[in-house]
Each structure stands twice: as C-alpha cells, then as structure tokens.
Length: 169
Image 1: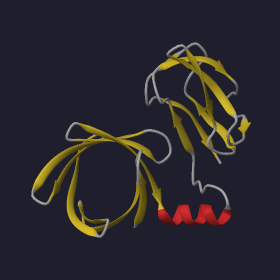
Image 2: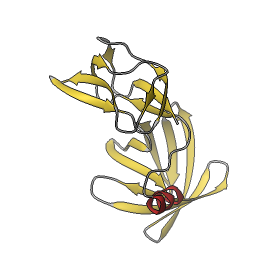
Image 3: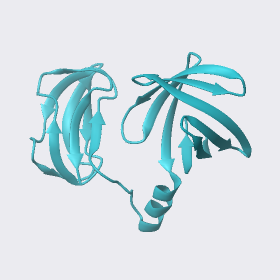
Image 4: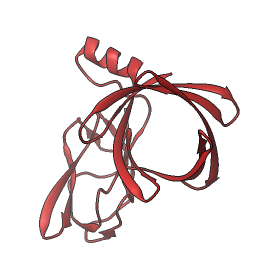
C-alpha cells in the first residue's frame, strides 16, 4: 500500500508491502529496504533494517498524525493513504471512515464545553475550549457527526494526548 508521509519540511510517497508476518519491504525515494518490525509493548517497536536495530515509539495524536521517536529524535508525521487522498482531491473534501477520536494536543484545563454527548455537530464546530499556557484554544470537530463519547467535564484537567471526545459520522 502506498502512503504519503509528510513532516515539517517535505512529503514523500512510501510504498509498504508485507512480505511475511512482521517483515516488510518499504520503498522510499526509489530505495527498497527490508524492515523487520516487532511490537515490544504498547506503542514501542523494535526495528531491524540493514543489520541495524532501532527502538521506535509511535504516539498517535489526532487522525493520521503521529509523533515518532527513533534513536532519541522525534519526528511529527502525517500519514495519508494515497487512495484516500486521491479520492478526497477528486471529491473536493476529505475522506473519513468510522468514528474520529480527538485528543488533547497539550496539557490544560477544560474552560468551557459547547456541546453534550449525543449532540449533532458539523466539521469545524467548536466542541470545547481548552485553556493551556494562559491561552484559550478552541477544539473543533474534524467531521460532521454525532458526539458519541465526551471524556471530559468543564473545569477538569486534561493530559497531553488524552482523549477529549469521539465523533461518529
């Protein structure tokens, strides 16, 4: 499957093909690498590539965004299935499948809730305000849908990457 991986400065196509269980051929910029990826625990992985071993931690943020730490260096990436991207471009909008979980980008406090569980919302609608570092940050719905889960209450502290709510199309 071909994915588009974008970081802060560039975007590259990454073709991932599973060879056998835990072994993948990964093609990036015309170079194919064989990678053995074993899940150690939670979000930690052991990677073996070209006779070098790496430990990686993959923390999912929101949607298809990840913070990946390899060898002590952190990379913020967005991974998009190329088929979904092409469909979105053809249709003029994003392609979403299934419930979308929205997590806190940083620790803070829920200053205000704008909706309740079971409310219908639209993409871009403010769901809550999180106060962090003396600033009010609006948290919006990524899609049109129904608030299925609301994991926080007004005045409650939230942790970085903690689930705030789930919206279902």
